[in-house]
Length: 305
Image 1: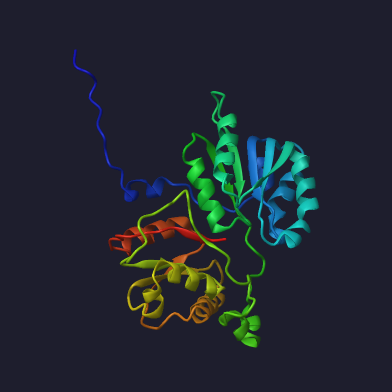
Image 2: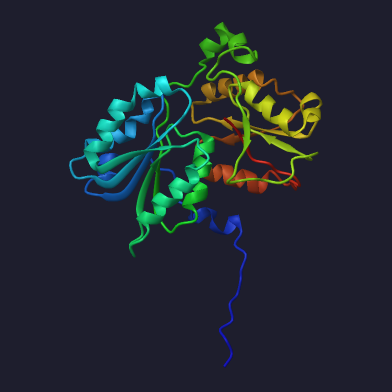
């Protein structure tokens, strides 16, 4: 008897892009009233917006969650602790149990995977809510790498900052604070550069191209490019592709923001540079599909510790 033939078909990004969910404004009262989730994840940070979504959920009389887990960073601990009491109070209002997880330890993804495995033991698909408002980029992609290995229903929430620093006025008054390597800016200095265990990449020697996402602390990008290939740092030419964030602001503020990030990182006028939406992930995916028509022979994912 002939066995059933199975066909493997390649699915391109263009085939599914329109089927991906849209980003919609959050209305806790309408979206989550009377709902119950298995897991709620958020991060404890020094920005007050780490409290916005948990506190709004805590005000719902009939919203519940079996377990809430907040991520703790090993940096800025004193500043983060200021928001801890309010975050704990909010989580305890709607969750049966509350725990924390160190997110910058070597065993973080292993511990997260264990939590999801326990939650996935029943036949019912776990309902999970993830608040990424103050999650670092390293934390987000580490989480998503684990989440993609499980069959889950995932709701991703995000609360934007009311004010993004530096403001044009702050930058005009103390531009050296943001452009010089000795300045403070949002963060200070660079610790270790650690290859991501979730995205190990390939051999970093003699890469053809580096794709750089500039931040408001130029030491970070410089440290990473130097780590990969010091020659590229000294003579970048066309070997660094800069991806500048196009923020979710009014037109004037967007122009000023992008101008600041270029000046802070000393991006040359003739550099290969693209602007990509910082909020609309579908625009980002279309960009990578349509505009970056190059082959990356060497790619290494590295993050700052």
